[in-house]
Length: 261
Image 1: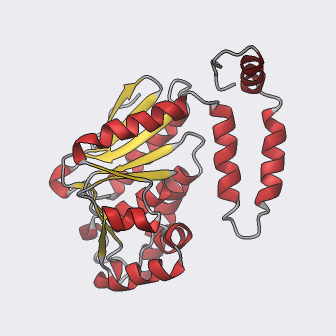
Image 2: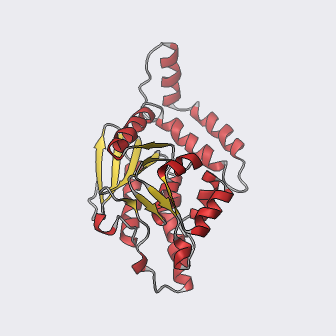
Image 3: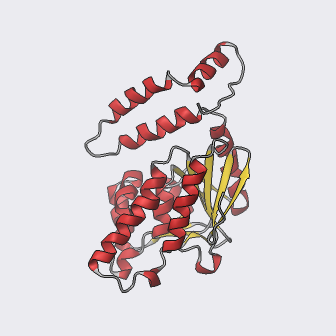
């Protein structure tokens, strides 16, 4: 595993903890950090002993407080378009479609690109001091890392429109009521809750989970029949060692030991 300037990675059992480590910049996403995240996710996804990835921000103030505005303040129209396209390809779409489940642990501000990163994760847990928003229109720009697309799918069009157009922030309880986060816990309990859920996930078939992620995602893809994806992936599961182990263990009344094969 390579070392990173802006990230730290630790492991506990089948769970990897990926921490964005720029606390002096409130963990803002610059080009270098996005490139490192792409590489880190790629490497972790290829490791058989990593079955769940938890993502959080260093310090107690921010998950990710946005993109690094100084990097693109003088961009042209073409450069702006390239910035969004490359970011979506390298990080946000990449995370959403990863075979390995990714859970965001939102431990403070998740604004702009930070909320967009959390939206790309498969689901989200927040500490009770978390604040979330997409403030881009207050800078004369729109969310460019998938925020206008993913937020309405998760919380509904009307609420997403309000959040985007007001450039406002919502607290963790509101985010929970909107369905934006699955759980709200105290800051001290955030890691424990993340590890608890990751541990439950890691006991199940990695092969089946990867197929489930693809099938759920296809339900939201324009022009794609998610039911057909589900049927195809259901069938694929029958050809795996995990399926043989899972069904045999069930019939033998024992716990399955999955290998992800």
